[in-house]
Image (tube, rainbow, N blue to C red):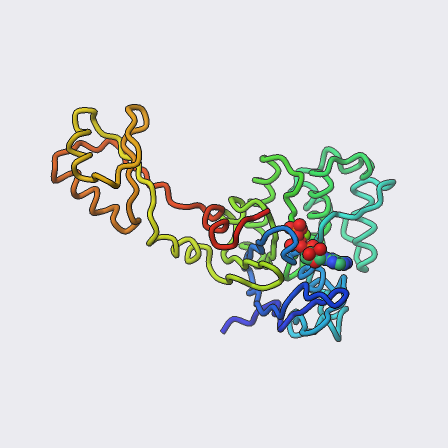
Length: 306
Ligand SMILES: Nc1ncnc2c1ncn2[C@@H]1O[C@H](COP(=O)(O)OP(=O)(O)OP(=O)(O)O)[C@@H](O)[C@H]1O
Ligand SMILES: [Mg+2]
C-alpha cells in the first residue's frame, strides 16, 4: 500500500460554538493532484489553513509524513508549502528580493533555484520590480514561485488561478502537472474553475457545509451521470429527416438544418442509435454527444458552486 503524504483524521473546526468543519477524513498520496471543490463558505480555506498550521485544529489532526500538525507542527510543516487565499509579500521589496527573503527565513540560500522557478513561472521580466506594483496575477505567480522554492512533498494551493488571465491559468496548470509528474510532488488545490480541475486533477474532494460529499476519481464522478440522458446531435441529409424522426420519435428535442437533429437518450443507448441509423440507410456525417461536464454534474449534485 502506498503511504499517504498527508492524512486528515477526523479533522474538525469549531468557531464560536459553530461547527465549520465536521470530522473530515481524507488522504493525499505521493504525486497526486487533488481538486478540493465546494460552494462559497463550504470550508475549503478553513480546512487548508488547519492543514498548513495557520489556525488551530479543534479536534482530530493532520498527519504529514507521519508527523502531527497539532503536536509537532514544525516537523510536519517542513514537508508542506502553499498559498492560502492571498499571496502575502513585502510590497516595498522586489519580487526577487521577496523570494530571497523567504528563502533565507527557511534557512537556505540558492539564487539559482530562485532563477529557475522565476523563469518557469514566466516572471523574469518583472522580477526586479517592486511587489507592490504587481498585478494580482503576477502576485499569484510569485506566491507560487515561493511555494515551489522549498521542493516540498506537498503543495496546498487555495485558488491559485484567482486573478490570472486564461493564458496564465493554462500555464499554471501545465506547470503544476509537470511538477507533480516529474518531482512526485502532491498538489492539493481548491478552485472555482471546475473546467481547470477537470483538466488537471486525478481525484476530487467535494465539500459542502463542512462535510466531504464525494472523494474519488473525477472519471467515476462523471460516470455516475452516464445512465442519465445525454443530448446527441446528429448531422444527416435533409432528405433523411423523416426516417430519423420515425426512428427516434419522442426522443427528438430539436431539428435544425444548420445544427442537425438533436435527440435525448441514455448515454449507453448511443451505439444502438448509431446502429438504427445505419440499418435504415440514413447517412450520418457526424454525431456529437453532449455529456455533462464536471461543472454541470457538480451543480446537480451539490446544489451549485457559488
Ligand atoms: N474566523 C471566522 N469566524 C467566524 N466564521 C468563520 C471564520 N472563518 C470562516 N468562517 C466561516 O466558516 C465557513 C467556511 O469558510 P471558508 O472560508 O473556509 O469557506 P470557503 O469554502 O473557503 O469559501 P470560498 O469559496 O468563498 O473561499 C463560512 O461560513 C465562514 O463564514
Ligand atoms: Mg476560500
